[in-house]
Each structure stands twice: as C-alpha cells, then as structure tokens.
Amino acid sequence: MNTFEQFFHRFFKFIWNAIFVLTYPVLATFGLLFIGVTYFFSFISSFLARFSRSSPAVKKESDWTMLSEESDVLEGKLYKQIIFGPECYRLRRKDGIPSVIDDLIFGKKVKVIQEGLLLEKWNTTDIAQIPDFDICLYQPDDDKLTKLAHIRCFDWHLSEKQDDFLCLKWFDGTQGGEVKVAIA
Image 1 (cartoon, rainbow, N blue to C red):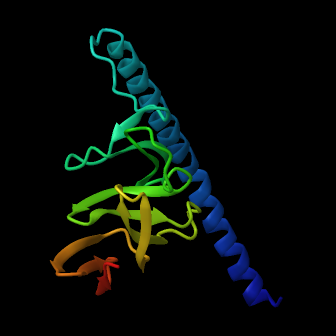
Image 2 (image 1 turned 180 degrees about the vertical axis):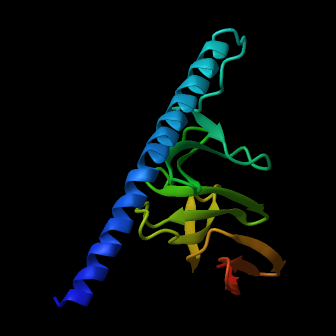
C-alpha cells in the first residue's frame, strides 16, 4: 500500500474502532435491561398465575373429539400440529366399527353432503412437502373412501353441487382455481 491508501486505511480503522468503543456500552446496557425486564414480567406473570382460579384448557393428544357439528359419524384424535399451520388428525368411526380410514391422516375439514362426507386426506405430514392432500368422499354406510381431487392448498371450499358433480374452489394466496369432479 502506498502512503495515501495507508492513511485512509488507518483513518477508517480509527473511526470504526471509535464507533464500536462508544456504542458498545449502550448496546450492552440495552441488552441487559431488555433481558432483565423480560425476566421481571415473567416472574410477575407466574406469581399472578398462582392466584388464578381457572386452569388453562390444554388439549391432550389422546382425546378423541368431534370434528364436525353437522356429522356425528366420525371423531378425531390430534396427530400433529404444524407450526403456524393446521392440525392433522387420525379419524375413527364413532360406533367403533373398523374402517378404511383408521390408518390414514386427515385434516380438520369435514363437509357433509348427501352422498357422504368430504374429507381432506393428507398424503404427507413433512413440513417441506405440505400442503399435499386429496379431497376424498367417505361413504360411511359402505365404508368406502373415494379420491375425488388432488389439491396443494389449505384454503379450499365446496362452491356448488350439481347432480353428480362437485365444484371445489381453492386459493393459495397468490392464485386460485376451480376443480370440477364427478361423484362416482
């Protein structure tokens, strides 16, 4: 390096070190105060929780619950909660009869139609590959599960039903679509 470059190198090194030396105590103090305030409010919260008469409702993974108000045929047991996302369930028939749905994973959406129940059967619970599921028609009388459509979006709904066809609409946040499927 020549003398000119060496002068600027040392000058900027001095400025950088001065900024660091002057701001480090402020930043360190702020960090310690932030941690201290967090611990203080955590202590107050746990102290006040002792005086509370109500206990928080904790959902146990072993509880079988009704998934739909419209249908009392199926009940679900929480299988996995996706972080910042939906829950998936293992389903069983409420009457205790072994079924084709016993070993599969389903979403919480259960839509009741005249032909049976529309369910979303998850193909995977791997967070990198979801959403990946099939919309299926479950006919409880025949214990039959029929795949109707493959959808890669959590936001779907049954928009209309015409004779033996269902119109499913979906929207993934940027684009939407419509799938018309036949009920066989």
